[in-house]
Image (tube, rainbow, N blue to C red; front, top):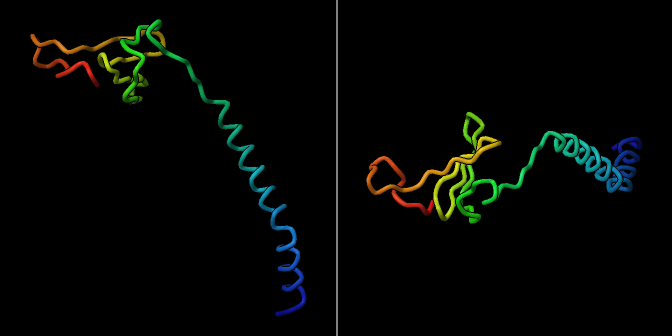
Amino acid sequence: MCFLEMNFKSNFLKHRNSFFLVILLFFSGVLLYAADNVFFKHVDTLDGLSNNQINAILKDQQGFMWFGTASGLNRWDGNHMKVFLSDSRNASSLPDNYV
């Protein structure tokens, strides 16, 4: 092993914590930049949600957010909530309101 290789390894080992800190800061900056594109809205029964107990969440290909609750299936389009409930007279409705 030549002197340059030994010197490089020695310097790397001395400064590896600094190296990892720089890498961590770089990726933190990337994540913070990506976080600017995130939109969050709190939705509850005042917005038309049938129940505040959310058991499942899904976003479909059309951009609708679906919430399975203890009182039905809810579809949120970003402005309005549509609630789907079980109907014993309709065979194609939900089998139960607990989703």
